[in-house]
Image 1 (cartoon, rainbow, N blue to C red):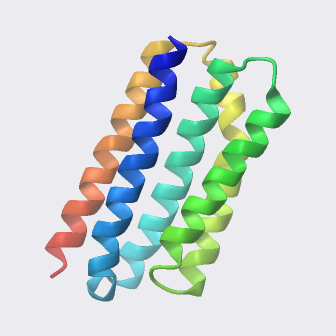
Image 2: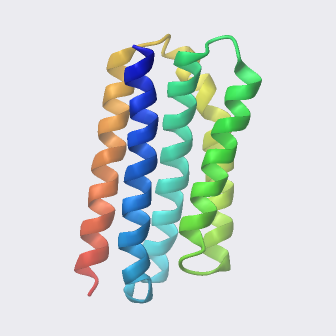
Length: 139
């Protein structure tokens, strides 16, 4: 089970990098509102996935998992927000911070439910695909 969850973390990282480079090419064509939503979705989505997966892997390390999920959310939200402008960067930062703080609590409440992790992963994967489709349709 831990190998599977570790591979999910790695898959999320690779997926985020692919989406980043895809959006980086189109950043001048994406409007302010879509950019704001991109920063919020990516920062929050990666923070909550990281927090839920890590609290499932390390159930008694709440502080460490919270710090890692907060840092993941802040970095992802800030990096994707920086594609657009400073206000979007700040929005991605704050949303990643808030979702990173909440993620271990949600993961602990889910009590190591693999169904919950799979559904959450599926939602985030679909959201990444939708972001890429919307970024393409703005041209």
